[in-house]
Amino acid sequence: MKAQRVLLVLAALAVAAGIVRTLACGVGHSAGSDAAKGASLSSGEEDQYYAFLSGGRSGSVFVAGIPSGRLIREIPVFEPRAAYGYASNEGDPRRDELRSSGGLWGDTHQPALSETGGACDGRYLFIDDLANARLGRVRLDTFETDRIARIPNLQGAHGIAVVPPDTRYIVVNGEFEQPTDGAADSPEPYTSVVAFVDPETMETKFEVRVPGNAVMADASRDGRFVFSTISNLEQGRDSISMMQFDRDAVAAIDVPAAEKAAISGKASVRNGVPVLELADSAGVLTLIPVPKNPQGINVTPDGRYAIAAGRLSPTVTVIDARTLQIVAEPEVGPGPLATTFDDRGNAYTSLYVGSEIVEWNIARAVRGASDYVVGRVPVHYNVGSLQATRDASAHPRGEYLLALNTSSKDRYLPVGPETPQNFELIDISGEQMKMLGSFPTLPEPQGVELVAARILAPKVRQTLEPPPDAVQAGHELVVRTGPRSVTVQMTAIHSVFTPDHFEVREGDRVTFRLTNVETMRDRIHGFGLPDHDLHVSLPPGATRTITIDAGRPGVYWYYCTHFCGVLHPEMRGRMIVHPQNAMVALSDWRPAPR
Ligand SMILES: [Cu+2]
Image 1 (cartoon, rainbow, N blue to C red):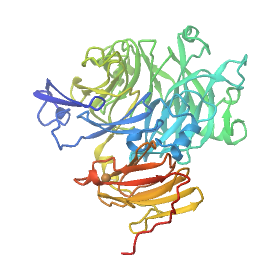
Image 2: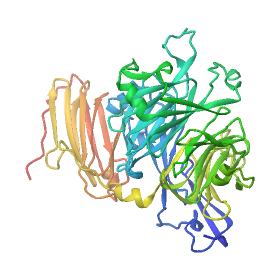
Image 3: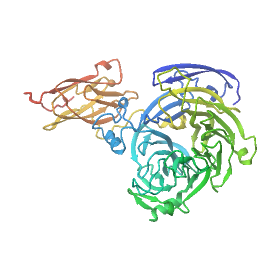
């Protein structure tokens, strides 16, 4: 894929502001190059990749198409979102689950895609919550959150990784060290843990204690080792004392040995989870000294090396992933934070302080050659995470690279004191990297995973399978289930709610069971009820149950919140709330037989 001149029109959809901006820049490419199409998709043309961007303090995951950079979906995980009817109503079990597991706010950091047989299987996206030590799981057939799990004994869930084979575990790193004995006034050094979570049950199976804060994680391709960067080996409790040592460490956890130790009774049990303590971790935990307060750890696609980014050192450390020996420590530039790979033996490291991506050749660096740096491209600005296109962790595609920048400074129109967050798209298919365009996004992507559309798109559902207890058309009902309780089983189909009215009394508890009985793609309806803080979103086939208070006497129009057809404005009905002492007899209702 050689470079020649083609004009690219870059369309960036800024969902936050609802602004479509068109950028133009001259970027050289051959007409036949896939990467040359970067960001120039016309209306109706689909992207080649899904990018799953963690939403940081938005508590969600953003989905963008690559190479267009178009934002195509937000998946709320740790924060309620009324637009999708996600955990947004009091009485919604998902809201209760969020509240009891840590709260109605989350800080998503690292996404990870499930794999089977070394390939992305399109089943799950896992995402962590730094703020409340949680792991969320998103189903990729529906793009909806389906599980939230609290990780015991851990604070500051930061790096996560999939452990092969076949997503045996999700590991979650604890970044905020804690008193080991849990006592607030403990004189003991603070430590942290790396948690091994079952991807199906979302249970934490065991944890391995580490002597500092565990930052980022990756696993060897054979599943033998989990690598975690450990900063603050000093075990300091303030920022100055966390930066004393020239070298901190990469923790290499021998997974089979850790499993064996955890089930042999060698581990102490804390909050129901076996924890392998430092004193008992001989043969399980190896600390590899690397400079200095390291950040990213990334295993090469061929599994030969684990590469640690120095953060406070301008170097990356290349570790042999089998022998755990350091084989090279090339200088790459100021503030290296993470590394990604192409299919030609090159690594790409983000330089936060240098605001650039450096491309370097792994074999040349390991050989000790001086010409290991292939090229550099400036980014705007202060790049944190990055990811190159790939089909799975072992299968790089070498087409595009996404740089997640923490600051955009002068790149966009001013929108108040906070500038937009942005990511940039770089073509890595040629001899030299080429910047293709920048894309503003919502706050604040911390990590990204990419998967080819040809792998994931066929697995995405267009409609939902109605559950066995879905409300069926013709079987709607309004029934008084107690002196103060009413159940309303309702269907939605364009452009009618059935029943289109019902009566209750002030003080009643009203349980809605709502089914969208549509069977066609895109026939989505919503159920909004004024003055009751109630919104439910109903994709085709979906059923939702929600209980509310009838509220004050009056007439309340429930209405469809999705513009579903030309009769959409008529798609509504009345909830009539009578005063408690009204002389009115309320009877059950069923539709007349057809
Ligand atoms: Cu509708």
